[in-house]
Length: 400
Image 1: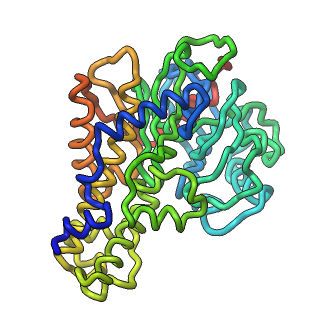
Image 2: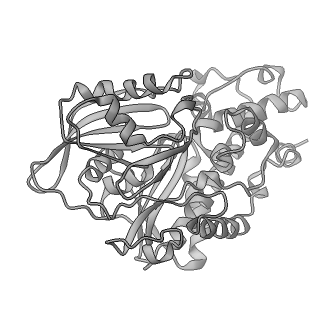
């Protein structure tokens, strides 16, 4: 049996993902989400893509990501550029075991207190949150295996404000893809391809039926949460990872392609191939993370994974499949942007895109194939610390 025959027998070949068909289904579900229907949230951010900030302003910023919690003091100079001071990084609370509500928010507040007592906090929060016009939001559910069940259903910004117990008057919450977009400036979309996956884009307010109130803006950024898309074909390896996750009914597309899960998918494929006699027994019981696998795909012997050409072929094909899925999830939002400025500028954040061996090239091949029939070109923009800078800008946003 060839590797391709093995993968196809488990529905795990890249070719078994029909890009145009899946994209059409995604666009249908996104349209439903803008009307408050279906399973893709299409969350309004109530943030404009352009925010004016007076020179000399300062605020605290917090980035609660899928792996790390980062904090900093943000200072805007006379030209509007943002400078970060006292940048600190630690593991994201709740990723190393279940926490109570109070312990979780205390862990978020503690590094902010050390920065000083400021009126404003920009809070980049990388989880499914329904926002409202006052730029706070209710946590709908966790993803990326964070374990703080008591926090679901509570306002994110108000909970942090209570934990801070300071003079802070404004905590503005935004999603990580929205923060990446605001941090890069002059872009039409923001993409996160790291531990998790998300895409945001600028939408016309008149095309968001679920917003009934009158707003003081014509456009706003939408956090799509396209990781919730559930109509993609699933390989046996992907399904096993989904079934083993903390919330197996949620975030199916994210769990099929994002960095937080891809190591498990490849491990599962290797284990299965060993049981079926395609790989040596050494691949039957091991477990490898994505960083090791990425190193292995470069041919580096330091990866501590036995070399076998079939193992390399299985891993590379699975990375290609993940890149193809990620491209579908990105193409849907890019096709909705109106008017279509050419090329579209897309802010890109996430270690999976920038570091995973083989992913970036496969992603662009797949994305080009989906966008070229519509005459759309794009340019990837990378801004250092974009999520923190975007959160700083959001801290000074006016209510819509």
